[in-house]
Amino acid sequence: MQKIPIFNRQLIRNRRVCNFHKCKTITITGANMISEENKLLQGIDTVIVRVCNIDVSKAWYQGKLGLTPIWEDPKMNLVVLDTSSPTSLTLWQTDQKMTINRRTASYPIFKTRDAVLLREVLTDLNVQVGDVIQDDHLRYFSFYDPDGNLLEACEVDG
Image (cartoon, rainbow, N blue to C red):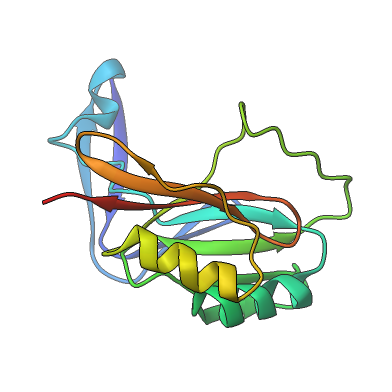
């Protein structure tokens, strides 16, 4: 059994927890540590996309996708973009060689109200796009950023 402090609005840096509000302690055990009741995982905060040049990528995501920066860290070479949803997109520059394998890559899927129209708009903006695929419940297509990162847009019927 382990006692874990749970904070309202916590900030974790270098394995230290700085609390801004009153702390309470709950008792949880092994498999129960990430249960619905304890809510230690509360959703996905951000998705990281590694890029070769933060300035080029930031301009591309702003100009082509209309995403706006909500936070930047020049020392870390990263920028957090608002996706109009609870989950942000973080562009983070790497100096490592990037290789993307479409069959094994993790990638974000953007919601859209009209996949066909969005594909046309991205095509007009000279974005590399794939064909629109239609199945019984959704319509989607893939597209790529300047570093070749796989992205997808999906329209759910309904």
